[in-house]
Image 1: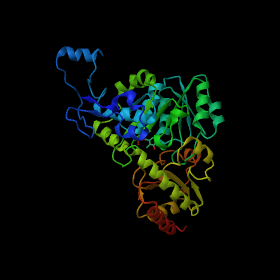
Image 2: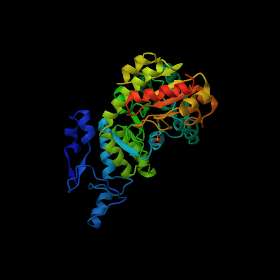
Image 3: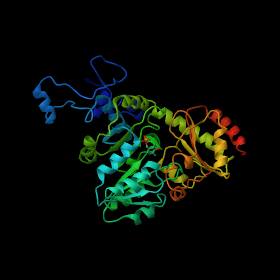
Length: 402
Ligand SMILES: *Cc1c(COP(=O)(O)O)cnc(C)c1O
């Protein structure tokens, strides 16, 4: 293997983000391929028996097994770490593998976790049901209320877990203020940053300790593969996360790592364009629906915070219709360009009815707590021309009587 400038830490850290996204982490074989190679291999061979023994003793560099190292996956991990500004990153098979690994590697029986109430559906199940089965105490708070985080602390609080903006309600929480409260109590701050992406929000710069992603969303951005990532300090990665993940195996396949690696080359372009499109569509919808939620609009109750901690309003819009589920479904059924789909962060615009899809498995009480009404729709804006999206929404709104 040839190390390119993209693998030299002294050189890459001087590059600007657009260059890091295209060239960071690139390794080349003797063939000199321009596009990164896919190493579809589970294992590695050794020149002689002593070489194998030395690698297993950790005395000689080199790979031993793809649960521990794979060149394609390492290229992706180095590129994600650069984009995030993290000392280390590890890729996982899905966003939920990243969230689970981050939490279970850090928390033990007897520890306490404080989490925001409005979390991605499966994250809420982890916090409410799965972690307590292992003796981990959990408390959920209204994440918008900074004081609520302070009040929820206990002597055994080990970590805070939050998402901002939240799915699907688009509530924000103040990462810097919450991080100060956590650090006073000696707790770590974990942020699920899938909705914003590192282009829009950098939690580590705001005081977070660990950032986790569903790379299925904006990082792949073209609806092809499931993937995830965790980012943090080199020490947490080695001593805590890898001590767990090496043996539990949440690994990303080299093929899926390659797909996401190529997508990162256009992450900055895509996310910026999608945010611009979302703002235009949100401005149109604001005049047409009873309640529209978009952090980039002055009407968002936390617009000032959005402008402080995010570089743009994001790619997701939420709206609440007065006519409940029938009107929401009529709007969905009236769309001709925008697809009915519960995925998000795709180059295609997608709309879903959270109460009957992504959040159907949480109880009515929890849905109410999260602000998910029967008339709520979530719209993920893609790369189409925003004027076509506006025309599509205009005719669908008419179908729904708006
Ligand atoms: C999609 C999503 C996840 C889960 O990711 P998967 O890749 O589907 O496992 C977690 N958090 C948020 C905010 C998400 O949008």
